Length: 354
Image (cartoon, rainbow, N blue to C red; front, side):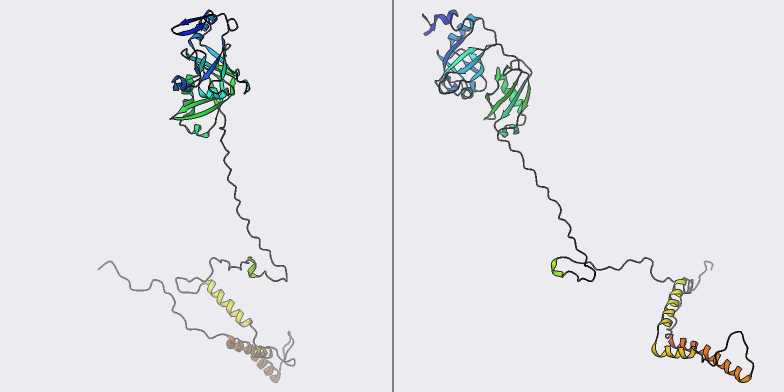
């Protein structure tokens, strides 16, 4: 039996609450997008539009508020999927339900397909939700959590596995619900819920820069004993011995003009070097002069008296003594002219007294 109110026909069983499982509202409707009801803002949330007959049926069943429903796809061409939603108004055409397009996509429904609407059991309040954006551009928003919090105010419940839509600055972002606690479907009305984000679907790990090691120093092999040095064309070079630094080398000068001890020692060393250097003709003369004849050499410790022997020996000894002196004078280099000596404190003096 049907009753007509305001040009609409209602089933009597629906008005009296006698059908549909006794205390549980369950009905099958044809799904329509928001554009069919000229209500585009329905996309920003999870609420649907039901016909007025559903309201009469629900009031007779004394359903608890807020009203939450379980949606199941009834299409034979697709696997049965379930989701949850709330209700915004009871103004839809009879036999139809208006729902967001993203919700139709989750249930894999096309416009005009049948969907089962049933009152949901009491859903627990959510304590934790993990989201995964489809695009990494959503994380570039100035404050993603604030944007998501504002969007979720239009939602009544969340179901694990659904994909919701978030609109921001004229752009739509799709976000997967990866995990909900403490159940697979939770209510988020007047509750504090912890939010976490998983890496976006298009996120790529940045490549780590390759570590460049400094080039190893070239090892120049030392030439083997008796071997030849490596050729210059093979890229290996052998450093020459550099002269070592000798501090405080040289001679000093005294203020009184006298030669310093270092200068005198240097002059003596040069003189010894000159005298020690052998020469061809002078060396032979020195040997002849310094070596007396075997006949004229006398044994030490004895004195020989007599004019001939004494004078001969004395002359030989004097010649032997003079020969080295002459030889040394001949070998000494000619002396240069004496340089003017430095005289300290020389000059005129002046008195302060007049």
